[in-house]
Length: 113
Length: 115
Image (cartoon, rainbow over all chains, first blue to last red; front, side):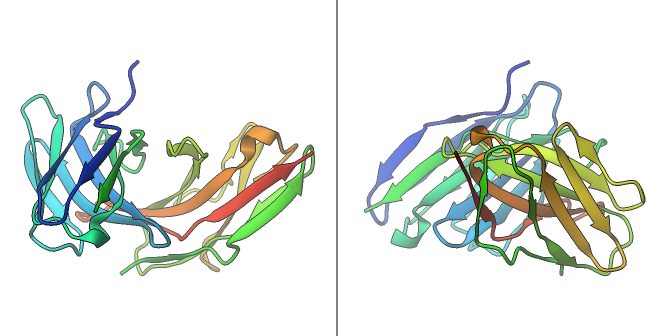
């Protein structure tokens, strides 16, 4: 069974640009979560999508947004990039009815210069 | 709001020895799950073990076991017969079963297994 996949592996952008990160969940999983892992700050919850709807978001500004597609894959968009957005962005998926366990992808390393 | 605290930023253990990583949490919830995740240098987060709060029996997965003390809000991870491949960051995480449905992570413990 294929795990959670994320693309691209690395992304380099300049301040003010937009970044788009992609995630494909494990087959059969309907929930997708996004987390930011910035150096020294641990993992912070960003967004949760389930059945195509945004269900919850963390304490991040509106320039962090996303969506979930009918095939349950997801996209995270970060607008007006700032230097402090440089981080590892992790996507996780879960089968919501079996709550708790989230399976993570390898992450996208975003560097803003 | 839930908080998760890992008070040991770094730990070291010799191969084949046993090590215990500490985690405490704070919540007013009664139904929740606790997890330990491992993040090796490859950065892929791997689920190590899970504990349901309503179960008194401590979870065990091969060389990994937990000591879950609900009243004390403590959830430690014991790694027996440590192996070089256990070298990684270990994160304790809390999941509440309400509508928030997110993992709250501790700051992590960096474990180094040495020869």
